[in-house]
View (cartoon, rainbow, N blue to C red):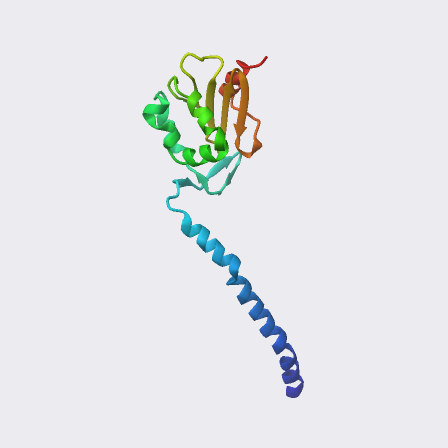
Length: 180
């Protein structure tokens, strides 16, 4: 009986050593090294929340914190450095890309920022070009989505994260000014 057990153990020894070698190689392979390099390149991470309320369920996903943005209510965008505050700055630049310059030219004259029902909204225009060359930004802080719009000679260009088209009400009202 002992000989039979010893024979079975010897038969499974090469298979076991192969599996252990395979798993140790997979866990320490080049993919893991690349991941470590990517994480090391991150210099400064924005503050984060881990709780997102979703109906009757709370999802624990790591998302950028918009809590500080509620303090911008009633302040002017340039005075508050709205577009330089993280997490907006990096996501704004990523979403607009080359269109950032066009937006910035049009976001020159602005009213105070409005924050209502966890929606931040602000609009602006080029001096002397109200109604033709305008820009607007809306942040749905509950859903963690950024919406940006700008017009060139009255023609509307829209940008939104995740391809979302469920625009906040104030953003929709701003868009309606350019319906032809």
